[in-house]
Length: 275
Image (cartoon, rainbow, N blue to C red; front, side):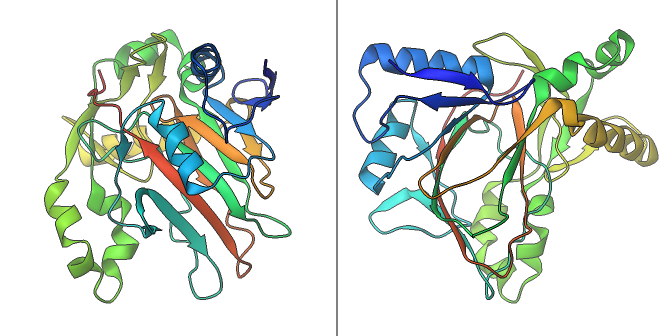
């Protein structure tokens, strides 16, 4: 039976004694599901996942969500390739929650480290429930009444600005007009309350003057990355990170360029609109 060791004070658990290349029995799956709720992001070492294993693991937790902005593994459109080297520098460097530009953002993602640079290339994670609990009662009360606007085009502005980028992503832009989500959401299973704005996709607070909205969002963006709410995962070949996207943010640390880094990710659908 696997064990989980806390990875930091607020977020993250290192799972030991499990083989993700094997089909999870019901008892193991239920324990893993509960661990994800408890720790918000789970880390694994020495997991040589082939695409078939990666896909089977994700399928246990829900339907995969496709992301047309990225390349994918041949025969596995659900497995996106995140690859950077001298010719392909990373574009996303901001703290974010994945795909909040959708009406029903994903449950989470399972990220597999395929090629890891000799140094650098860590990923940072932040607990949005810990960040929420760190606010004053008055701030919690005010934020609970607010709604924010999230926009695909804002998050992918660098890609859209590239030569041919607007044409390449035209279908994604058309399919993802701006959406509204509560600034404070409730996790649908654990019931935890958490902050739900991020600097990559959130563009404004609804009903506020632009200067008011910008000032409040800047405060929240700084607040959620308080070191006490975060952890930093050092990747090794065949490491895996599985995060609950409903209650976390993450940020790639792009300190390895121009070295080669290749990751493969499956994003798992949720089907629930944040509330």
